[in-house]
Amino acid sequence: DTGVSQDPRHKITKRGQNVTFRCDPISEHNRLYWYRQTLGQGPEFLTYFQNEAQLEKSRLLSDRFSAERPKGSFSTLEIQRTEQGDSAMYLCASSRPDYNSPLHFGNGTRLTVT
Amino acid sequence: AQSVSQHNHHVILSEAASLELGCNYSYGGTVNLFWYVQYPGQHLQLLLKYFSGDPLVKGIKGFEAEFIKSKFSFNLRKPSVQWSDTAEYFCAVTDKAAGNKLTFGGGTRVLVKP
Image (cartoon, rainbow over all chains, first blue to last red; front, side, top):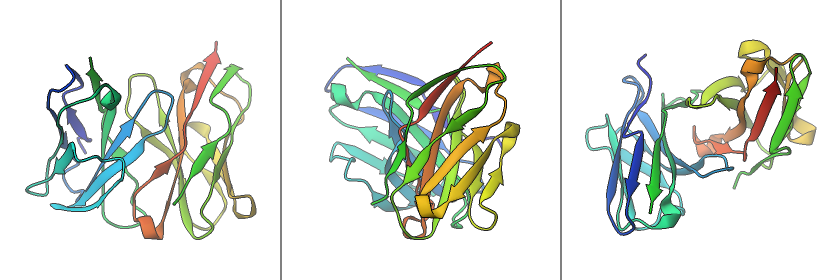
């Protein structure tokens, strides 16, 4: 179990730029989740995949956000035309598909939009 | 939709003091309940979980939590804290309709003074 890996750890970008984050889940986990966490708040669900299928997207996920998991392994989260309000920690988690399987989180990518 | 509330945003304790963190959730059906911990600079880690059975669950590092269905509560306790328990603690819930998708509370930041 090498854990959930996220890259980069930190990203500073100017407003209006596009950014992409990567998540590598635990290898035997076929569910992958993206969460966003802002200062003083708990993580908020954005979207999740089972294998390559994106099964649910939160209303928080505006049209500027897109997530993919093309081969059912790693996932990318892209934010287009970033805004200052996008500044947050973006967390990735993975799990087995059974209902009782807990989520394992990565260290997150901290995005700062200037 | 699920919601989770944690009563205290910040708690400051001295070593050897007892800790209790409150958590209430909104859903009236069958739920799975979790406490996650985030130590400074580290990723979210599972502290303990409740799925069914004995409502008093024991987790790692001497933590325990009690599920009280009638009160929609899942409070976290530790009889005697250590400086190393300084962290942010998150309560989370999922229900069968949500699959493994977690809804988190806002977190409680705990500072243990040596």
